[in-house]
Amino acid sequence: MGVAVRISERSVEDARTRAEREVRLLLDAAFAVLGRVGIDGLTVAEVLSEARLSTRAFYRHFPAKDDLVLALFASESERAATRHLAALGDLDDPMRALEAWIDGVLALAYEPRRARRTRVLRAEGARLRRDHPVEFARILDDELAPLVTILRAGAERGQFDVNLATDPAMIHAIVWSLAEARLDGSKVNHAEALAAAQRWVFGPLIPDRAG
Image (tube, rainbow, N blue to C red):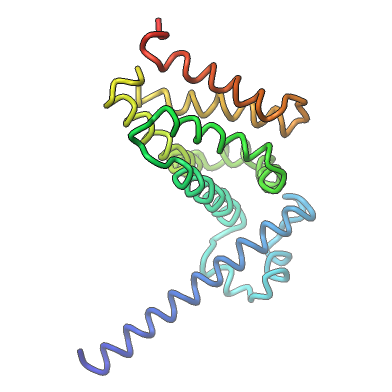
């Protein structure tokens, strides 16, 4: 490998590292500003002040404020998916894996630190879904990916009677409704919410109970 190639490759790598660092700083700053002043106070200027970056740095990565907020949602979905995958363990037992997934979604509302992050972004979810349906649908698909993997494994083993085209979104809606109720002040405790979610999710999925 020639000197010119080595130097150019190092330059590309350095630029990528800088870009990743800038994006992470901007996302962390945006989340901090959202938590402090809400979406109405989330301006590019406030984010840049928090991140201590230039205007040029912002527009290198995000065409507009909504693109930043969408990136926040995508980042949180990635965090959730990573936690779900880590908690799934052995997919030879899809029943236990699904229980872990359900508990992971409920933790977004029942675990105090995660609940604070969830509340910050939740208020913007409906608007982004309306104004950016394609981008928001892509984020939701990524969020559902671990669930789809579990359901497929259960179907292949004959444990679940499942329609992969429709059931993942329905299951997510059931579990998320319990999480949202908690965010809205529900007094149902974590164990009760988990039991309710399992009853509504597993009942139709298990062939002996379905139909």
